[in-house]
Image (cartoon, one colour):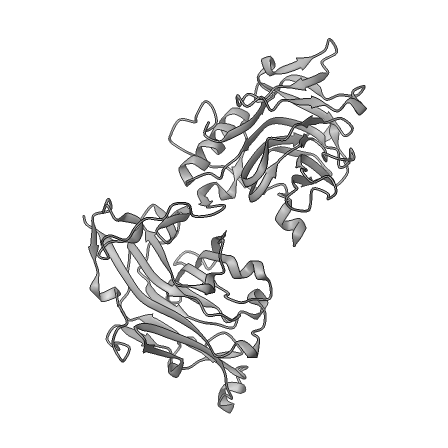
Length: 492
């Protein structure tokens, strides 16, 4: 798990087309290291084409020099090598070293364009493209040290690799090897290195950097190019001045119209049966995720909240025969279906490994099944890191043309345990874009390529043993609380 967190392996890629002209340079804000093999003016090259120095174009003077210990075998400069541009060729021995870029902890975003030609293979399986090692006593697989690496022994096409982290220093750094010990040396070509001391603040900023590199080096960009997820804290939170508007848009730039049919403050004594349906093992509705059975008694109003309880109890034998045993929870869903608009709930996940979920779904047709998870949260899990994981997923299960499962998801890591308090969770569903918000701040943005069908609003809790771990009976009963749900549509 640690290696998966710290190493960004060679990413699977697909072409991304855009009608907008590609930017001529990368985004400048936060750029602290820019190594560009195509710019000969930044390279110190001897008469044999060997490099001694690679100057930083960011303006921060974070230049890289060849390690003196292997200066007799430095990287080579190859002109007109990739899409008409030069590259720096690493031979599996040499590398560049650089100074500390930032001593304090914070965010980092790292992008590298590299390749390996057939005549350069095979190579050692594990190799570093970039290594940051402020703590020399630990290797660069241990935070706050980090690395972006390959596990690729054979030739591969020009590729963009990306790493995003938070709460780490940057450097001392190495390009093409581990900072300390002259190990995991890269064999191949590096074309460009971009390091930012911040996360990208939006999908547009991320795509600007990706498209700059894709156009310049004629490469594919990661499949994730259509989606962006925040790295690090939320920053300044918006103030709720008008409860009649989404927290994220108090200026009403979206021209929102409140939809009372798909909204509820849960201040009554009984759940509104005209607005909500509680699954009760009738028809073809979901019975729950085994071994926890959905039971209506676990969904009720109290203290101004919708309460969904996960509990331990003896279940009727007819359900035990189906695989349900010892646990129960509940699913609550709207009878009406909503379409494009802004969905917002103030909620507190349960403090157990039972899931707490706020989602949109329509699975009532064999040839049309869609789901957008505004959140799926494990409040107290097998792994403390999961307790801070804000999981956002979208699934296309079936269409009239296909039953292929298409998934689009990511996770924002919260600074706090998500089950510790109420927070406001929002989702803006538009024909072209999907946006997720926490406390009014954008945490994920994705192009809408699949979700064009009305769906119900769903709150539930399930037994997700493989994901969040088996619930600890000492934590039960536990309650997922929802203060309100609101929905708005944009005025036409």
